Image 1 (cartoon, one colour):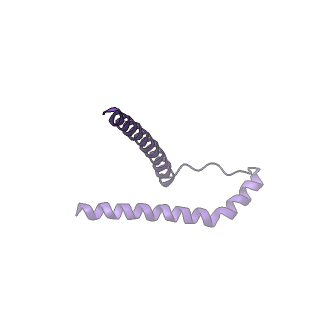
Image 2 (cartoon, rainbow, N blue to C red; image 1 turned 180 degrees about the vertical axis):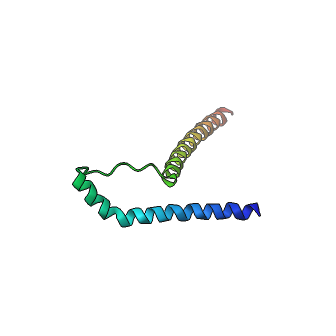
Image 3 (cartoon, one colour; image 1 turned 90 degrees about the horizontal axis):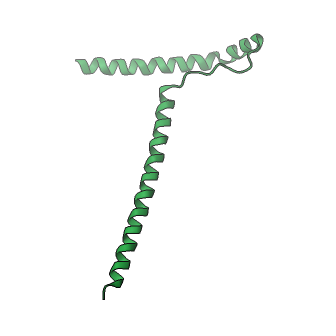
Amino acid sequence: MNKHFHDSRYYLTRAAEHARLGIAETLAPVTDRIRDRLGRSEPEPEPESELDRLETVREEVASQAREAIGTARERVTAYRGEASATDERKP
């Protein structure tokens, strides 16, 4: 039963977020006109959404993974180079 409540809460949260985005998009022309009349040309920055934060974290992790893979490749190449140089010296 708890699983169903958890799922319901998840989908209600997503629905609320999509509804908020839809309302903001629909009212964007009105808010732009109000900002112009009040003398505020730029909209106030919106708080970073959870999806934006997740995307930022994903990019950071991907960058760190690429760096770690590059370092590992360099080490393996250096190790193989040392091993082949050692093998060539043995008569």
